[in-house]
Length: 109
Ligand SMILES: [Zn+2]
Image 1: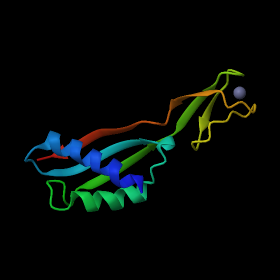
Image 2: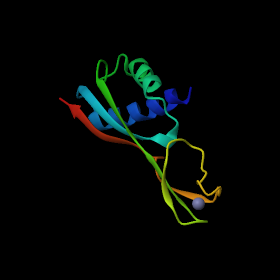
Image 3: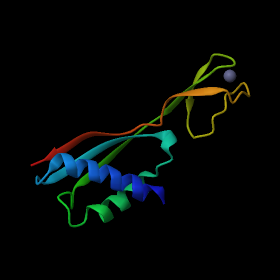
Image 4: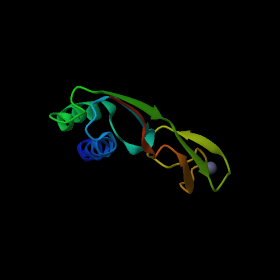
């Protein structure tokens, strides 16, 4: 379950920013191509925040869609999953969006 290590690094990052302050809410933007399952991430979040300043905090996950551009036919298209294949049959595509995982905001105090 790679969500555990990903969630752990997110929580580590939030803790280093928050210091001793209590964290009430964290909002993440997760690209559809990261293959992170939001429900697994929520479960892991409860585990890794236990006993920290994040304990009981809410986690909001916004899944951002993937986008790719085909180098063979020039078309840009939505990418719902990590299969990098254009409708024209070419796998020579570049990913424009969907691999990001970032902390968008956090509520402390
Ligand atoms: Zn194409």
